[in-house]
Image 1 (cartoon, rainbow, N blue to C red):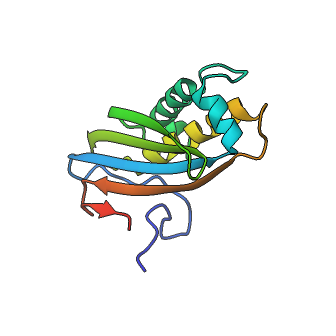
Image 2: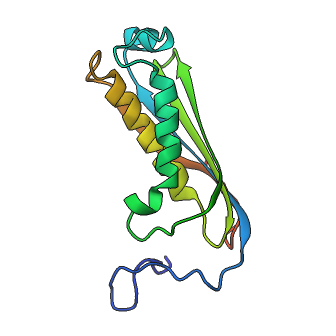
Length: 158
């Protein structure tokens, strides 16, 4: 196993120096799922929730979170993002909402954390907006689906 990039030779946390890395097009796609009861899903799909436009609000929250990842995750670089898209797909079986985020930049470091943060915050926003009708909803299975660009090239989850 290779050395952790965010730990220096003294064992201390550090921000990775990317100044010598090439600028390349970089993309990341992440996903997660918010599981809920079928009756909660029907309320959401019918836009009949106490807090209003749940999907629209979660989409905006995810986009905002991607743009602020460097403020939330220690040692992340602030990035000039060229695209952040958050898609929310209601699902009947299993009941819930699939959250997918795609993030792009042209830079010296990847956007995996931005995509993962977008998914997490969009999912948390769904929970927040639905908790008045269901406290048992669960944000699950957040993962990187795909990334491209940079020294390590392309990664696609199985």
